[in-house]
Length: 102
Image 1: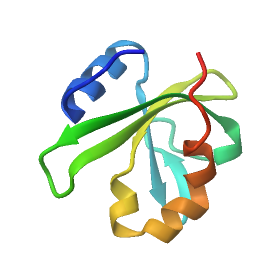
Image 2: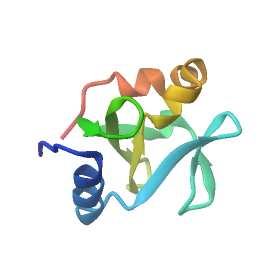
Image 3: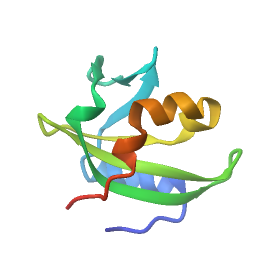
C-alpha cells in the first residue's frame, strides 16, 4: 500500500488510481456528491486507510479508500469527525476500524 506525506498527495494519487467519488456526511447520513445519492455504510468496504500530515487545524488527517457494493471507488477524510465526533463515530466509525482489504 502506498505511503503519503500529505493529504493532497494522497488525494491526488488515490484519484489517479480510480478513487473518483467522494463520501461525506450530510443530514446525518453518508452521501456521495458525484453520484448524488446517500450511501449506507454497510454498502462500503474499506480498501485503504492512510494517516497523513495536513497543515489545517489538527496537523494530521486520516483518508480512507472505499469500494461500494457496485464497485465504485471513493474517498473520505476524517474532517467531519473534528466538528461532530459522536455523529461521525455513529455513522461510519465501525467501518473505519476494520482492517483494509486488498
